[in-house]
Amino acid sequence: MFRAALVKTTLLYLMIIMTISIFFSVIIYNVSTIEIGKNAGRQQNAIDRLGRGNALLDDPALLAERQNIIDEANQNILNNLLYTNAVILVLGGGLSYFLAGRALKPIVRSHESQSRFTGDASHELRSPLAAMKAEIEVALRDPKITKEEAITLLKSNLEEVERLRALSDGLLELARDNGQSLEKTDIELTKSISDALLKVDKKLAEKKIVVELDLEDKIRVHGARTQIQELFVIVFDNAIKYSENGKKILIESSIKGKNAVIRIKDEGVGIGAEDLTKIFDRFYRVEKSRTKNATHGYGLGLALAKKIVAANGGHISAESRLGAGSTFTIKLPLSRL
Image (cartoon, rainbow, N blue to C red; front, side):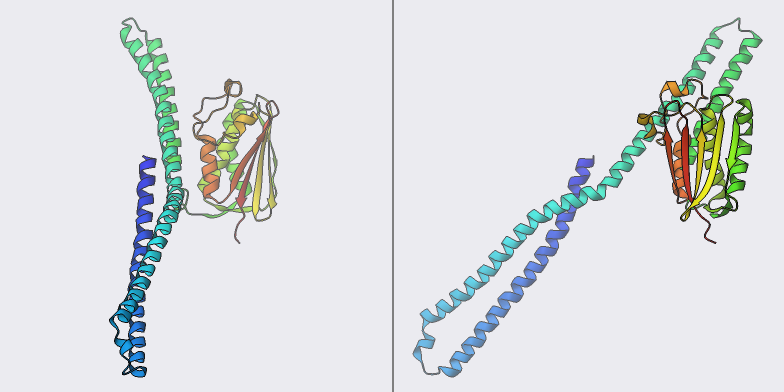
C-alpha cells in the first residue's frame, strides 16, 4: 500500500514539475523564434536600404542560406529545450521520489502506530472476555453448583468487568485529542500534588508506604487542572505499585528556568535498562520479575502520563536501576503571570 501511494505521489509531483517546465519551454521557444524572425527582418530591411541595386542581395542561394541559418538557430533552441526538459525529468523524478517519501513518512508512522494500537487493544480485550466466558461455561455445565460457588464466580466476573472498565477508560483517554480543547489555567503545584495524594491514600495505607514531601512553596504551573492532577495520580500509583510494603516515596519540586521540575523517587524493585526505554509505550509491561507482586495493569498508565505532559507543554523521563528504585522527573511550564 505504501509503495503504491509513493509511486502515485511521485508521479503527481513529477507531472506538476514537467507541466510547468514544458509550459515555460513552449513560451521560451515561441518568443525566441519570433525574436529571431524579427531580427532577420530588420537585417533584410537594412540591407535593402543600403544595398539597393546590388543583384547579389536578391540571389536565391544567398536568401536560402540565410533561411537555413534561421532554421538551424530555431532547431538549436528546440534541441536545447528538449535536452533541458530531459534533465529536468530525471532530476525531477529523483526529487519527486524524495519529497513523496518525506510527505508520506508521517502518514506511514501514524498508520503503523494505529495498527499496533488496534492489535494490542484487541489482544488485551480478549483476555478478560475469554476468562469470563470460560468461568461461566464451566458453571453452567455444573448442575450441582452451590450458592457460595456462584457468588465466587460472580465476584471473579466482577473483577474482570472492572478490568475491562479500566482498560476502556484508558483507551478513551489515549484516543482523546492532545489537550488543545481543554481549558488551561494557572495551577498551584503543591495543592495539585496534595489532591493527587489523597486519591492514592488508601493504596499508601494498604502497603504502609511513607511519603516524604520536599516541595518549594508558591510554584504555579500553566496547564489543564484535571489533566495535571491525573498525571500525578498515575505516577504516584505507579510508584506505589512497584514498591514493597513499608518503603518510602520522596516527592520533590523546584524551579529550573521556565519550568517547574517535579521528581518522584521510590524505593521499588527498579527497571532494567532495556525496559526503561519502552515504559512510556502503550501496552508495554516490563518483565515478570518486576510485576509478580504488583497489581495487574495494561501498560496504559505511563503512556497516558506522557501524553498528558506533552499536551501541557512539558516533558517526562525516568531513571532507574534494578533493585535500586526509580525516579520519574516531570517538567511543566511555569505560570505566565
